[in-house]
Amino acid sequence: MSMLSSHFPSLLLLPPPFLLLISFATPTSSSSSSSTQAFIYSSCSQAKFMPDSAYESAVSSLLTSIVNGAMLSSYNNLTVPSSSTQNTPINGLFQCRGDLAAAECSRCVAQAVSQLGTICPDSTGGALQLDGCFVMYDDSEFLGVEDKTLVVKKCGPSTAFTSDGLTRRDAVLSYLETSDGVYKAFRTTSLGNLQGIAQCVGDLSATDCQDCLSNAIGRLREECGPAQWGRVGLTKCYACYSEGGDYSPDENSKRLCHRE
Image (cartoon, rainbow, N blue to C red; front, side, top):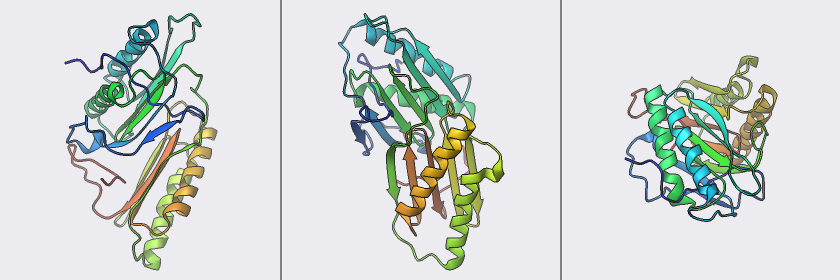
């Protein structure tokens, strides 16, 4: 079964002006029942490539390499020649959530790639975030570049946190922000019935990752306040927390900090 559409998509998380369209509704094309494949967001570049062009062929090659690469590792970045008159290379990367098993990571990335063509047909760059993985590509040089553009903000209903509950929530977020002073691109913790997770895209340096997460967690505190759950995603990192019942260690229903 082919994982690639005949016209390849783009969903990019690059600095403005590339973040021109962001979708927050689950695509109707996705029929996956796995929570790790739940749709979070996508973004698309405005620029388009011509169908059956050399650029489309290069994107096809890149996305195929991404799907194949996810069978071997949970993160990688790739560059392919665009074979265009400008001879501009196309950069891409994929990353899975740090707690996913290899097989689940591979399935998630394949699902993400399979959605690209229908969400952003013929776009020259783009990005797609599912609950368990992330894929992006473009002909700009985004690899290793910190980008704190806000792409996702989701807050649950306000809840009557007790002072103890607020203390625990703040402790969870503080741990995610500092991770005991040790650099970790993927961080998760729990305290009582509160769980939290944070992750940077793997191309960031330790310093840029820390800066990105500090920004995301600061926005999470400010934007979601006493909400029962919340998620803030920036282009190159995200953080989220949830209270009670949202995480199951079962391999087929593993989810953290995500609500439909």
